[in-house]
Length: 457
Image (cartoon, rainbow, N blue to C red):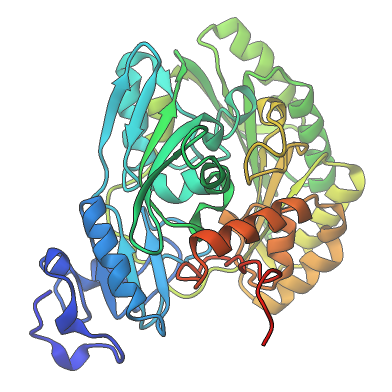
């Protein structure tokens, strides 16, 4: 933090009081590094100060500074890829934990690894590959560990190996009051329950401990299919995925019809097997859901599948507009609603990822992410907030069974109720009162503390 550009400093920030432990790495408007840290993958931002702690103690210092600036927005950033864009802001403070990016094996026999929140999933996959291990972790290698591993983690091996948080065994984190705690099934178990699905509300995780899986070569397929009948295609694809062995996890991307161009859909699928015959047998029903224009099937490593991101800085612009939800089955009624949404021209990108399988094996009450009876996660991106919300609410909402906040940008209070069923939300509110009663962590779908036990004046 140079201080040479004081005339560009934001209002309401005591720049000269930044803790000494953070001053050398802090970035403010006008600094050379500012353009590299101001925005996220999808959202343009103009924070007044970006703090970049490199140790848990420095995270505590950063939170102390944030507590002294409660009048400003606060974003917590690991990789900056969050669809909601809430890890940046305008005029506020961002705590970027990207420097906490270590990856180490704690116990090779138990396949226990320790990962920092700033690590990227492609680097995690590459580090685990020499051991013959993998950890299901979203579908884009550039995503930071911290945001995904506190929210859920729907990845390319979800049907075989569950969510990313299903493999979490412990966390180390700094709470709102600056205390550094460890949480697991035996240490602060209530906090550990909350972190797995609602972690953004309870503190900054400085280390994750995961039990990873033995995963060898995998089959990776990409198909370009005829998308002229989007409702029929989605219905058939959904049925094929649900009928497939758990080895297979798939996703489909669709868009609106384009004048003069054939309508196409992109289908990706991973088969957790290195046997070519098994791979082909499991992929064939998926490939047969519509006539194909192109296909590519390879036997490769999970690490190579996740090596799909660059290492450059984020330079997002504007405000992302997305709606998302969870659905049990891709019924004809639901897929026709999707087709109407696509024909409206309001949506330019529609994405469905398969869940189900091993995800459903976990008790819904085991952790804050409790939507265990669904088979698909759907997301739509649009360019106009009001029009997208209106059509989504009209056409799709009745078919949904909850939501996954990592892909949501609508801030209406109904979203929180969709993300957490009543019993789950009530428990989270009780824990919020205990761990963050003053709501320091309030900028990423904040959970209100339970006030039922407070005395009225």
